[in-house]
Image (cartoon, rainbow, N blue to C red; front, side):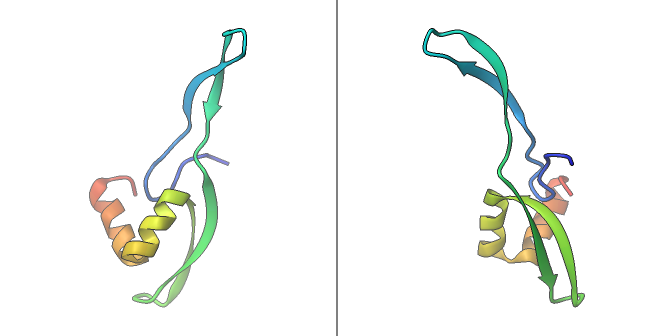
Length: 77
């Protein structure tokens, strides 16, 4: 299961876990992904997307059709 947002293209990033003694070990920061089912009224069908929570806020603000169009123009979809 890949940890990539379907709309924004967000992926995991790498950083350091710093202990109290200031030792640094590598760790990964994963995006907050949720699997959601969306209804597209233009086509009358449902699609299942794995989206980040920031993408969910964009969908709530613009609507699913506008968010998909924006992702296509950006090139992440």
